[in-house]
Amino acid sequence: MELSLSSSSLRLYGSTSSRYRKPPINPNKCNFHHTLLFFKFPHTSSINSFSSTTRRTSSLVSNNKHTNKISITACSQAGAAGSDPPLNKVVDFRDAFWRFLRPHTIRGTALGSVSLVTRALLENPNLIRWSLLLKAFSGLVALICGNGYIVGINQIYDIGIDKVNKPYLPIAAGDLSVQSAWFLVLAFAIVGVIIVSLNFGPFITSLYSFGLFLGTIYSVPPLRMKRFPVVAFLIIATVRGFLLNFGVYYAVRAALGLTFQWSSPVAFITTFVTMFALVIAITKDLPDVEGDRKFQISTFATKLGVRNIALLGSGLLLINYIGSISAALYMPQAFRSSLMIPFHTILASCLIFQAWVLERANYTQEAIAAYYRFVWNLFYAEYFIFPFI
Image (cartoon, rainbow, N blue to C red; front, side, top):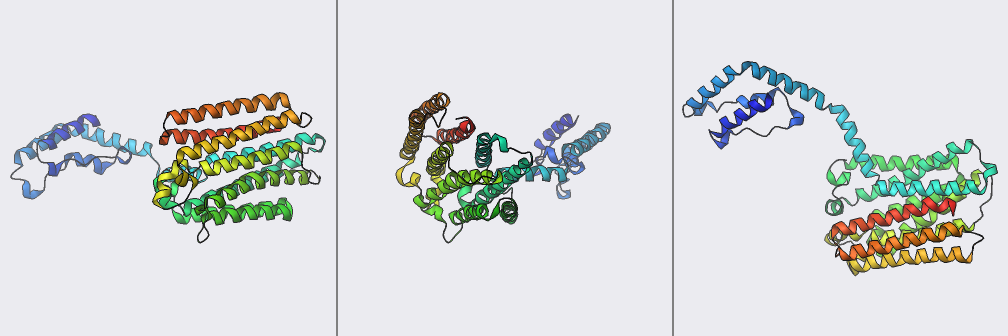
């Protein structure tokens, strides 16, 4: 009934003047006022010139009085059922908060920590205790807080760049205020440090704080090390490669009552992921070339070109996979060669294929984004297989 009445009203205003055309109605904000707009008459100064129109309108209202009541009732019911403002605010904040955390980095951090904990426990199954579960969970929360702090403070100082490169991020999109973002990043840092200091001792706390410091100088002026390509990717490689893997493994062994000792698999994953983090550091700027050039951010992608950096990243990853296969061949006592060799061969083949797809697509923005997502999927895959190699 609402559609029938609106249609008639539209025809009516179409026969008068564009000055009196019905404004668009937001279906999510349907209310009595919007329904009355269907029957809004011209201004009194125009009554004489629109008298016939007014009579037709009055007749329409009179003949459809019952219809109007149903229309207003239905509209009110739709508004009541369609949206609850407090609930909408909660849903909107949840969505903005999740985008603020940069989910692909959260997955990498969570998967890496779970993988290393699992490996340490499998190496010492006789020391596993249920009480370690809570400690492991608190460590995971602390790592997610540290990750949230680093990616969050980067968004606070990259609003202008993100409006060009990543307009979907919550601050750039206007879905999260700068004040709220500051509250979140400070809360992440404080909660993370408290958790680590209460559960893992001074050494791990110092490593954790050092990681936060590196994340800060990466984004925050006046240092803002992300302006310098070599320093920027060294920071990323240090935090995501060495600090994460070494720190988590050290903490797990300490929780088991063991002194730290490198094992061949842990030394392998630390080296592998550090190299992989270098690749992520240089390829992460591939989709961002336009905004980086506009704001004079110097990256390898802006200096050397998208194609050259994509080929460089693929080449470094291939070296990583060749090294993995070689380690399994020359150290069969340390690695499960029957799993490690075919797994890395398959991943290397997939990488070559993805690089070929990117070349065939002539490095369009969509193809670059797909390639970068694929690099992260390779990263996840390595942690997924690590406990079993």
